[in-house]
Length: 288
Image (tube, rainbow, N blue to C red; front, side, top):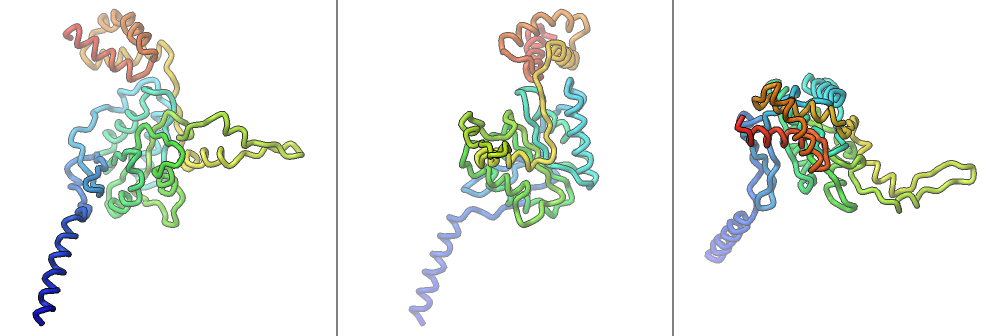
């Protein structure tokens, strides 16, 4: 009897030590704290951290992307209303409003129950866990993956494919994935990939398996939205919007045009991001 009690005490001590090494169970966040959350890791276990200060950008702040804005807004509106909607891949030129458009949609629809969860590429292996955590919530969740691209063999690539359209279980009705990327197919495309194409005797073209694999992920997004570099006048229109929003008069905006063009030339880009950066620099420098 004494030996049994001694064994049980040792077993309890061992269990206590093991439990201390294990990561804590996932705790659901206070959903009332914020409309946006970030997936974080601690001791190897993921959790949702509330984002207290969401970027305040609005849909009306985004100029020269009317078609793209209409597509994203309509898809999100369908989602909020409980109607069928698609996962979205936004691709194209840098600084043209891809990420800003998603943030603006959150601000537009957050009062109607839209929530956003930002997930880094390295944490995409946890997608199934994230979906399970929110699947029974009444809110609608957009899982946001910004500036997404992969190299061959990365684990997140396969996890995202499965989450989009590759699992035996159906995708949750209250979750969509919105991703932005500068790459249309999310993977690097090399000249050697074309070597796997060949023609049959009757002239038909057969794509090789390498190319098929690279296309397969982007193909699982139901909606593709493309963004293009801005022309000079488009860029100046965006500059004028931000200068006006920061308090500049019409005369000041007109006087700033040459400086705005030089600013873009120095950076080699006429993007919305560059326009916003110029407006902040100009207003700060002139004390407006």
